[in-house]
Image (cartoon, rainbow, N blue to C red; front, side, top):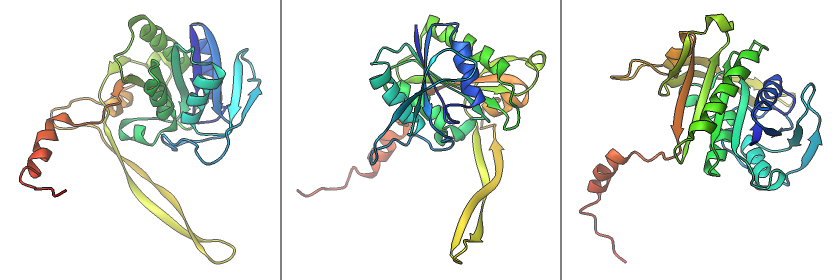
Amino acid sequence: MRLLVCNDDGIFSKGIIQLAQSMKRLGEVVVAAPNGERSAIGHAITLHKPLRIEQVELPGVDVEAYSINGTPADCVKIGVDVIMQRKVDLVISGINRGPNLGTDVIYSGTVSAAIEGCILDIPSVAISLVSYKSNDFSYAGEVAFEVAKKLLEHGLPKGVLLNVNVPAVPKEDIKGIKVVPLGIRRYAETYIKRLDPRGKPYYWLTGEAIETSQEEGQADTDITAVRQNYVAITPIHLDLTFYPFMDSVASWFEERKFKG
C-alpha cells in the first residue's frame, strides 16, 4: 500500500508526525504538506505563483517527507501527480489540531485535502483532534489507523470521503464510534477594528461558535457525538446537487421564452 499523508497545520506539526507514524503500519508513507500553517484556507489552489517542493526530515519518523509552499489541496495534487506519480492507494489528511465539525468542513484545509484526493478518485480520509490545546495525538493516531484499515478493506463509494473527529479525552473515556451526519456550526462573528501605524484601519475576525447540532427529525450529529465522547465519522459526498428541488427550480422558468 502507498499512502499520501497531508494536513493544513504545516509539515512539522505534531499531528502529521503522529499520523505518519500510525500509517507506517499499513504500508509505504509519503508526507506532502504545506511549509507553514494553512488553516481555514478551504479548497484554494495556487495558480499565480510557482510551487516549490523541498524534501525534509520529520523528527522521530522515517518516511519520505516534502514541504510545499502551497495550500493543502496543492499538496495533494502535486503529491499525487509529481511526487508519487499517481501510484497512491489512500490519501489521509491530519491529524488536525482542533475540530472539523458540521459546516466548518467547508472552510477546512484538512478536509479540503481529503476532498482533493476524492476528486482524484483516491480513497480519502480527514481526521481531527477536537482540541486546540492538547498535544497528545496518540489515541487519534490509533483511530486513524483503524479507520484507514477498514476503509482499505471495504472501500468507499465513488465521490465519498470520510471525515473523522476524535474527542480529546483519555482513551478510557471514549464511549465508542458513531457514524453520524454533519451538524451546523455558525458563528457570532465580530470584526475588531484597529489602526495600523499609518492610521489606516484594518480588521481581525473573531467570534464564538454557535453550534446547531439537531435538525428536524435528526437526533444526533457529529457535534453531539463528540460532546458525548464518541469518535464521530461522517461520510461526505462530493455531489452538492440537491436533486429533490431541481424540478421546482425548473418550473420557475417553464413560461419564460428565450429569444435567440
